[in-house]
Length: 108
Image 1 (tube, rainbow, N blue to C red):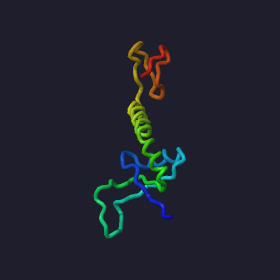
Image 2: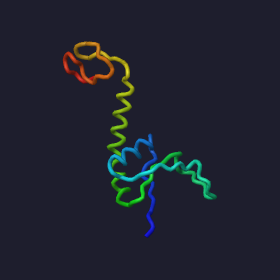
Image 3: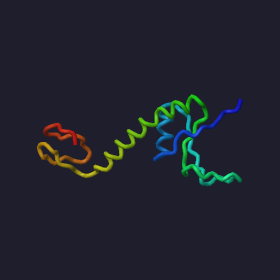
Image 4: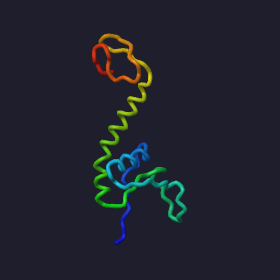
């Protein structure tokens, strides 16, 4: 019986999603369709897409997409705040690596 390969993701950071799936015990791989040397041209796919080999893995991967995108957005927000900040409550100066004010406990 031949294994069907299924495309499961084509959003932001496909390499990170592939790694995320592997952390969740789903075998996945990236495929760069921009360099396909087939006589068939593929127009509708972005450069890198994430693929899985098993139907059950495809279903599990699709369920994990919202959790991945949420964690990616949270990570981007945290990276965006790479500079020190002032607490909105007590106006204390807080170093960038901290998420909460050391003086009053307010989240940044």
